[in-house]
Image (cartoon, rainbow, N blue to C red; front, side, top):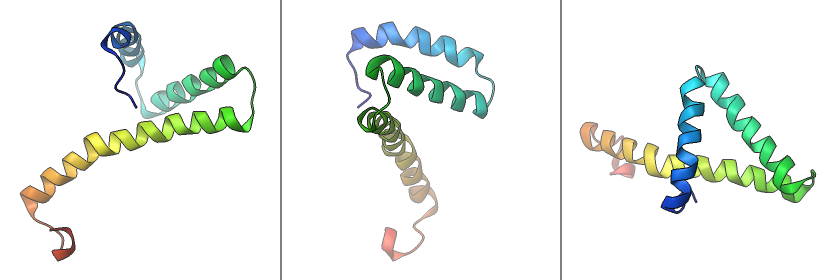
Length: 91
């Protein structure tokens, strides 16, 4: 869940913005996300095991699910309202 306390956001957001400002491509964003997950496993789990790798995967899946739920689904709902449903199945 990305809805962390405001105090923590205030500490984290400037670093995220600084990183964002230097990323120039999809590949660089992918690299940064991958590097962050690697650092998390190596730093907070100290060794590779199934549990640590599963937690890392869960972080990525949770972020993807939240993006889909809170951003993409709303966009698609808006477009369905504007353009109409595909068929009676998605009315």
